[in-house]
Image 1 (tube, rainbow, N blue to C red):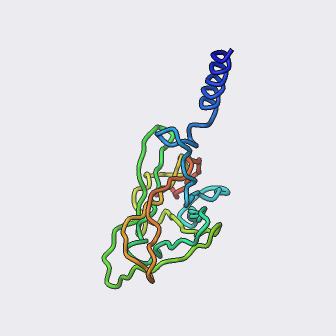
Image 2 (image 1 turned 45 degrees about the vertical axis):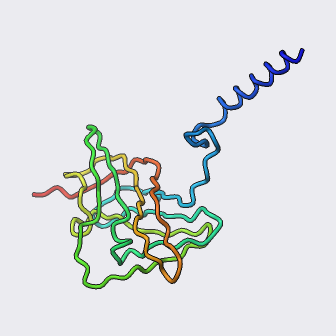
Length: 179
């Protein structure tokens, strides 16, 4: 009888582990920690063009305040990249155009738990490079990566560091046809 009870118990454990979502477990099989930052693209109404921008939402999903480097300095300037795939399967990466720094300091924006920071990615080639060449309209699948390295202390506190990636979504991009 004990063997049957032990086998039934083992079967329940095995079935429970098989049903428990793998995404919620680490590689070791233990429950993964809840991410402390989420990144998402705001849903786009219509098309993205040279007059509009994609809005990237960076959310503090932890239970404590977080410092995020301000976008005007070198620690926060190029934290976002956008990965795109067109209908033919061609891929690319959109990133900020590199710049020289004549004034620089590691300043930050503090996000309380649940607060969000919004940053924009535009089609302006003076600021963002890597968009596909588009004549007219095209559909792209895109996702955003928020990647922060660097460890200067800001007013005695560490800024958030790490990498998070948004879910992929489809957007329509429009560029005027050159005549």
